[in-house]
Image 1 (cartoon, helix red, strand yellow):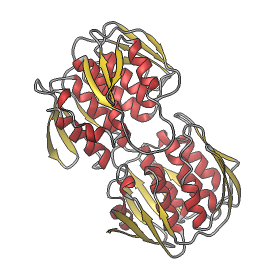
Image 2 (image 1 turned 60 degrees about the vertical axis):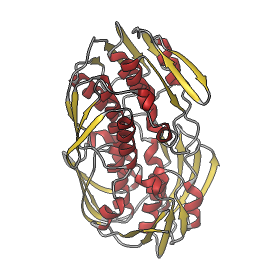
Image 3 (image 1 turned 45 degrees about the vertical axis):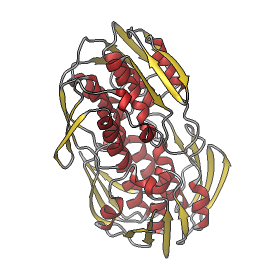
Image 4 (image 1 turned 90 degrees about the vertical axis):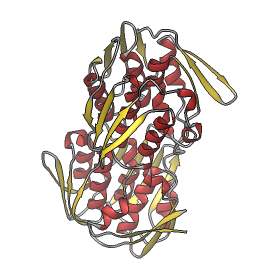
Length: 421
């Protein structure tokens, strides 16, 4: 077990780089199963979820070689066998669901356990199953496993029942090698979905409609080797921007695609954050005053991502007035609110999707718990601006999405250390 000890009240100052996007790396690694040729993936974030995905692929016989710190050669040759998969990893990793589309297209038959991951509300697999069944897949369950079989994948028009990033990604991967044309309507268009599509097209796929909610995939007989650099992580960039603003810091955030954060940055400006937007960087200067805005509401891209609603809530504690935090996507993402209240926040959970936060309230160091990945990052921000010392337990969740976050924050002035107990 590990925890963070944070002495708050220090302004963040300096430069910090954004790593590759976790949510792009995992599906792109999965997509490497679609060819027997060697692929090269660059800008891989060295975080637990991504390293576990690599380990999962290796357990099936995929060959990997690190040629540089974040640059990986990966070859899913003839010896890859889905029956050798390490099912224990799947039970602890939600992103393993991203193997469905690529494994179906590559092998036609396999079994898999129910994926694990953060407990942030219901995330049913039904939308994945319905879509893959529409392509010609038979799905059964036995002895705790889902069994998939498709003698031939046939492209068709598929209307997703809801916006689902991972279902869109699985469908794209499966459809690349399906017979005929697949049209996905109500498709997700998050930056990492588009990054996966770009990689697939480099491999020889024929995908049209990047950035719009109708995607068309013309199936091909074979995919080939490709080299790809993963996009910077917009969630990490947003997290650091909120942390810098909340501590009234002076921080330059590099390796950013600002256009992927348009609404996030507009909301930060509306609250009162002092932000200068450059081509590939954000410059945060000390703010004079934060004013509450009526509502922070998460939506599918290009709306505010659900992964940033909790960090916004910390900023709301420092804004004068009342803000409604509304997570329209998940009903389990407000567990951090009680931890903020321990620190002195004035926050009320109205229902599983909404909370009211009234500021300004000073925050004070406390012993608090990280219940999921994004809640952990949020409590780090709260502890950074709080008076006194905070202890955050269950920080293994944070390591799933932020690479060596304590070392990177130390480099910009944070008093944070990791201890084992």
